[in-house]
Length: 199
Image (tube, rainbow, N blue to C red):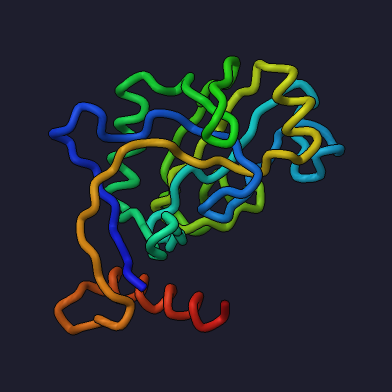
């Protein structure tokens, strides 16, 4: 199965992340924490905050894709995660949100954005989120009672998923681990082999 690294083409106007979608099954397999009350059963900070916190993009996380013809994995490098997080904000997209990548939502805004820089001393650790260094984390304020009551409180949505335009950097078969590849690429190939073996 091939492995495709997605990158940002900074020469293309439409390159980058356009919106953050709230979804039931995030491709990065990390649920967000709803900063609300016990009925969410994830984390309680303040009953009125209505903030969702979670991973937006995880570097070197193999993400399975099937387009009907091909099965493959995609991933984003730490550098691409950094650039994507910065471009999202500099383009002023922090109010762009969708539901399951299908319906535009109003009243959702990215109010915090940071990259995890330390294994121990990071805000994500305070909330029990054990994501790798280089992960783009975000907190989204939900000023939309329908979304909060009908989707967040009921557990219909569990995490974030990004929407955007990326280019393919390279394709590599799962068995082509060679000495010339960097350690990051080798580690990713090994992760995918483990996923395929344990599937």
